Image (cartoon, rainbow, N blue to C red; front, side, top):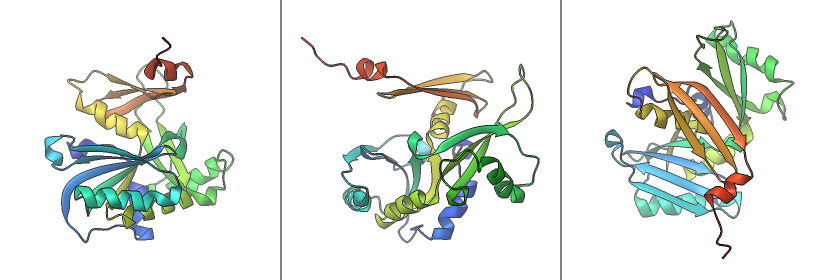
Length: 237
């Protein structure tokens, strides 16, 4: 099943290797996912990945960004997570997504070609960007021209977070985004070749994803002020 998982692994794994934060000195067969937001840090752990059973789900407040390594170190020590293969799942406000036509270039030419297209779109210098992409399958009922979704985030942000995760004792090997993480969940429930939809709700946003044959074919996200009242009702009586 792991071979079917989608992730922004190619460019991001190469980038992780260049900054030297991987920590494989202590062997651990489990898998850990880490999410860091302004509200805090969350970890999900599968100690036996082949069983697809969630063994640990914890969240802790993060009062200052520079506390990340310390907070994670305490969890790693208490739960025996040292050396565990770890994927950092970026929160939606930590990256930018752009839907674009697929570029008629080789893999080696992609990075330089895509930067020319992004230079006017990014809210920061393209030289500071870490860029990856994934394909969107052509729709039979629409223009069959292949499209790609490009994911972009700042290199200094990734470097700071990756170093803190590595300092905690976890073995950071990949970085993912919310859309592909949700795709991995939806793909587990596919029964045949028909499309499968997943609806994800947070207090102020929603996202709908559609997968087919383990591929992410459609996604859309919206912000909603009413969701907070719906998901987190207060007792007015």
